[in-house]
Image (cartoon, rainbow, N blue to C red; front, side):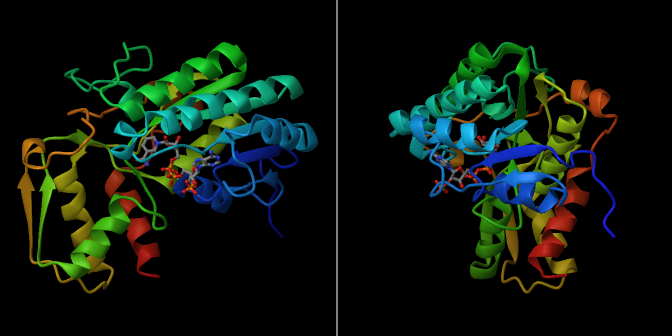
Length: 297
Ligand SMILES: NC(=O)c1ccc[n+]([C@@H]2O[C@H](COP(=O)([O-])OP(=O)(O)OC[C@H]3O[C@@H](n4cnc5c(N)ncnc54)[C@H](OP(=O)(O)O)[C@@H]3O)[C@@H](O)[C@H]2O)c1
């Protein structure tokens, strides 16, 4: 028989349930939780009327907002769409949460920072987004904080991937199957973060009723180039057949993109590590588990 989980009996609404974090949250949720997890087709967070109705009907204890406009480069030419989802959609959820007395988790990003500090960013460091996506996510933080005050957990994370969905891991595995040579940026650093470990942390934070602004990624540091090399090595260890022979390190200047990105995306996680009494998993170990799932092991 399945043992009781600490969140059993709680009502949790997960928005954006078709995304990589939304799927991982559903996979990690204990069966005793009363879960409502609509994807975008079933609940569009920009539809204020639909959001209010869904939340009045379900009366969640917690709302985890995993819905977002996440196309960082496309956001440069579609700022209205990015702000409509990342600011206004989040605010719709916060208002409806306030009405029924629910608490909310607003997932945010390292891209609220400009990445110029010579150390990992702390939750209270000055924000200064360098792209439209980061601006829209910061606007979502501000809007939800204004509405919900202390009933809100803002959790900033970075470099999220999963065995499912469109992300750096799945893109690299596809390209490593198709090409013999890949070039990957070496002068941006951060921490690859598994949607599965991130989901576990979010659920631990809910159990402990943590609010305020905190940071979470897996542990350790990598460049995109390190991340790519680790994917290749772990995928080969897991028995995946790859055509790639060489991975070459390049600079950001060699790979121009519409959106600027912070050079240093490291987040200081100490406040949450202390609050949930967990230092997290090294990114390579978490990656090994995700690659094993991709390989069907
Ligand atoms: N991925 C990263 O590296 C990263 C880094 C830092 C922070 N984050 C944050 O982490 C959270 C989860 O992101 P993710 O990586 O899971 O992204 P994702 O895979 O792109 O998932 C986002 C989901 O939100 C859905 N969505 C978009 N607009 C919506 C709307 N109006 N109403 C309802 N759902 C909507 C998307 O549906 P469609 O696909 O149908 O549009 C998608 O299923 C986001 O807050 C993101 O900003 C992500």
